Image (cartoon, rainbow, N blue to C red):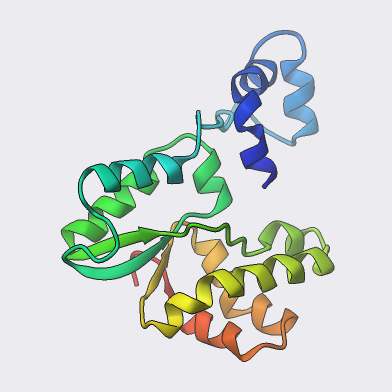
Length: 178
């Protein structure tokens, strides 16, 4: 959510974090070693929305020819620059699938988990189960853009939520390689 909120200020934030007298301070506070790796840049707009528009333009709507698959775009893949979301969709299409994008946000809660905020993680996972499980019920596989988000379903989510649907979501979420 926070990354998506930065969409409206991405140009300003990118300038402050990479240029001018405040850049070293911002980078140090963020724990970034820009000598070894460049600063991540916020995308201009949502990668998911951009892909949805492209799929609609190309006639790749739900119900189109091809096996249905949900392409779960996590918040970081959605908010940061890169063409990996579109590339993942292209591979799925070439493999005979018709990707569907989630209309509602589903967060795995990994940031919450890794910072010990388990109440927040449970809340995010409960919402995500509500979004993802209907696809599982329909037998539609879910392919995620971020393997670490998918791994949450296979371990942490099972420990944090007492809901049989969590195991069902875990069994039906996949990386592209799987």
